[in-house]
Image 1 (cartoon, rainbow, N blue to C red):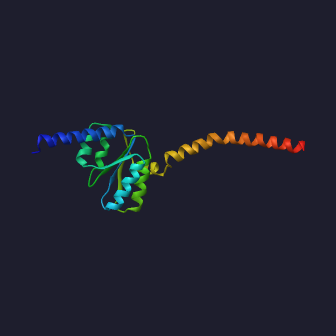
Image 2: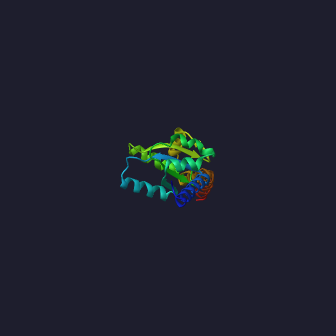
Image 3: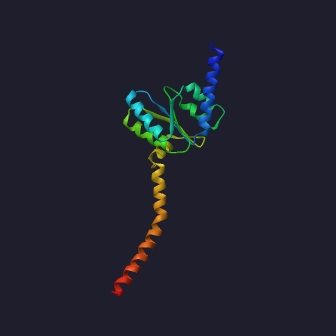
Length: 168
């Protein structure tokens, strides 16, 4: 039987994982078997750069962390090796990075995911992965807002240029 100290450590780990799930806007569970240390290190660095927390976690700990919550549906995929990637503020980063990695590594597979405390299908994860990064989306929105102003400025400049040409 496990000692009281070990049980307390495991309870703390489950509580931290449960809080991590509750505070995340999005998360992805993957089967990471078959990747080498160099690839894993590169993947972790890319995820960290985008603000995604990525950890290898025991299936039992995940099961206990989501028990009784909206994310209980994640337990259906808890077989084999599992790593969890969560993000507090970027809805697409984890899905985008992990889907790209999975496409180049045969044994690395996406198992499941969630968005705003709701378990989502693999199709939705794939759709999220295809979205551009937050910065690209913001730049696109800025360009849309800027386009009418720029067109107006060019029209005014054309009128000014036409007026100067007529004066000469």
